[in-house]
Image (tube, rainbow, N blue to C red; front, side, top):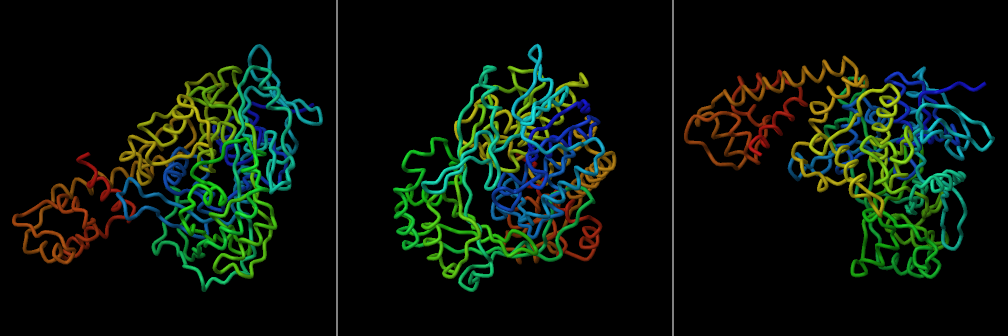
Amino acid sequence: MYPKYDVIVVGAGHAGCEAANAAAKMGSKVLLITMNMNTIAQMSCNPAMGGVAKGQIVREIDALGGMSGIISDKSMIQFRMLNKSKGPAMWSPRTQNDRMRFAEEWRLALERNPNVDFWQEMVTGITYKDGKATGVKTGMGIEFEAKAVILTSGTFLNGVIHIGEKQFGGGRTGEHAAKGITEQLVQLGFEAGRMKTGTPPRVDGRSLDYSKMEEQKGDEQPEKFSFSNETTPLKEQRSCFITYTNPEVHETLEKGFDRSPMFNGRIQGIGPRYCPSIEDKINRFAERNRHQIFVEPEGWETVEIYVNGFSTSLPEDIQYEAIRKIEGFENVRMFRPGYAIEYDYFPPTQLGLTLETKLVENLFFAGQINGTTGYEEAACQGLVAGINAHRKIQDEEKFTLSRSEAYIGVLIDDLINKGTNEPYRMFTSRAEHRILLRQDNADLRLTERGYNIGLATEERLAQTKEKQRQLNLLINDLHQKKVDPDLANPMLESHQTAAIQHRTTLNKLVKRPQLEIMNLREINEELATYFDKYDRQIIEAADIHIKYEDY
């Protein structure tokens, strides 16, 4: 009665959406099962994509032919390139996003693909035969057949939400936990563990006094994530704001520590080290009298605000009392309190590089089920699992990325070889090849690989090859063109860098930390006209290449 599928994806978060899109785009007939069709691609925590190391991952997903970059661009309300004060290998793109538009764009993208079907229900287990996954079974007793199954269950496996002394089952506020999958997999021989994450309160932006906060605007010349021509940079942006906690806030929060599930032993799961709750920060860094709070709008049209830096599972009355003592929040109205959530995960050492499980063939795991934290980390795993599920059932070669090819390769290699006992987050410091794995060259590194497996389009490949051609031409010219001291020195002095004594090639000037290619336009009209031929993206890529070429 029900159709048979090539791939079934369980869960429609960031990992599930990328997995379904990739497998379907490559030709598999996909069924995406979610507990709620209205929460596809929900930004469960902060309304933002990218950031340090994470922005590089979004660009890599885009270069391979995934959708996270395009969806982020279509829903962004602000763009910032982080770490600009550091070397170019550290530059990391980040967008503030419209939460509702992000989810809408993902759903539209999936609905446009005729190879994707949807089903709204809870999955309670997998079906299997002779050590191979053969489909899934649902709470209503329906069995869907498939050649491969991808579990992208997020925080829903036996999820428990904590707010002070209150606790209740749920995978996200207002949504049920998923029961049955963990128990079945443990019976099959899988090892399971428990992790925790948290989210801050959401508040009414109309009740805040922004005059008491520091405005954080987007970049003056905003860029975008996707290398494709499908999206364009923002013409207008929404600001975020910065404020701080204070000793009075901390004292109020401490009053609730005896009712905190973190301190009274009710929460057993391990939380993310690099995204601690406000009570954890106060407890661990008692010497600090303030902590930074980022005030982030949830979209273009909504007044809802995400209070970044104030993640908490303290009782709601304590949350309300404490948040009102933050500067600018004196009259705040809370929409919903923060909470912590505990959930099951499966140590990722039980997987191979394709994210297929070692115990059950044709069963793949992606996202928080593998012990990671973050939208971007989940999305890239979903992409890799979707690609490999399709290739496995087509008897095609495995698709893997090495540590020297991509941050995605670093992440998966770390997970399956080292495992993790705390929520794993990507950092530039984890990648020993980070000078090569930059955000500006993800397309040059990966688009051809995406094209070869049928994911990136021919148009994207042609665009990448043209970028490489222009880049090579510009770099070659910079190595060949020379400039005389009398022409170059006025420009060099104006940028407070040493004058030259002899005729010098332009690339040697670009290597100087005080200079970039666009400064060479100041030398004379001829050079200004020459550089005007090139797109800003090409100039920036050439600039970075020349600064790093000796390494």
